[in-house]
Image (tube, rainbow, N blue to C red; front, side):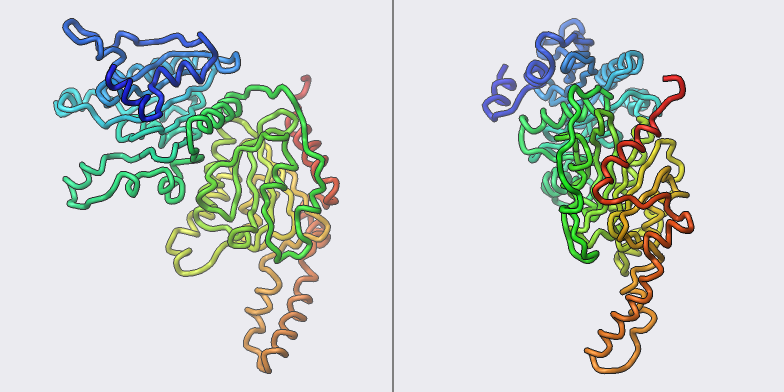
Length: 468
């Protein structure tokens, strides 16, 4: 009881507090209550550091795996790993998602030091099953054990600020390497969200956590929306006509999808691209959109990796993808090249090309270079590719091309700028949406005011099942 009281005094929920407050009242049915309760064990060993079972959320079944830090700091054992495996097997049989709340204290010592114990413990083999149920993981404390493994493989992962996610603790790091590092620097929520692709959403408190988990479970669990609504917004008012002007693409995304349905993923990394899940006419879709607010929307290695993750997530669950394109191309430079730009770009193109789900693409203002193909072009995953009338599509931005071709021309600075502008205008005449459409490089030109209707109608057609 002292450990329970200490958590509550600190303003935190126990494992059972979360279960009682998050899921439907009285719906939780526990599995493995008596795990670890061998003869002579104290009652405090009950559940072996992990609460597991199934419950309902808004009336729909959900698998439940919650680390219980009041029992041996929720340290990892073969027994509590088996408890999680049982929940996953049940969820797979029933076709419902699993929620894991993790904060494990690492492998349980000294038990795990015994070779026959260590070697006999599989590392959650169900994580590598392509047919496993949807998995949402939330890290809410210090996680150095099994919950870290699960979060790394989850379909969608969340962290609360102040929590820690790492493969091992700072103490082990210091003992092994002599390097002193704080828990936050090693695996804090901000670090993990910005520097790795392990964390999709960071939340500030329990209230925000519960809201995100509820939305995530609803989306990945394919729960139908009760209400379908889209905002009355003119897209053209959200996107400047000047192709070099910056703007925030998130309001454009929100104008396209059902009101309040967009859940952005990976917001802290690869910020020149926005990715997430939403609903259109109540159906779940993936969204990938250039973000001119950051790096002019040029694709970075991190942006490519983030988009690849979204494509694979949607392909796993059969979610159609909507791609909004407004990019000058890929980022360039020494650091970019050394950060694996080429590999990341080709991985993204490969994932999009192989994806089995429908994809609808709209080029808003521009799509230059390899980035056009990497954002669901006709031959690389895009089933229907449209562009706004003033969009420009080509090998290179005309202004950049003019500088490459004619940048060495002599003359005073003012004259050179004027000549380059003229050259750029001449080069740009061949990259209009009409020119590209004439060669079937895109499927159609769509008026800005008709964009939402065109996307919705296309998604309906792509979802249609003969005889349904």
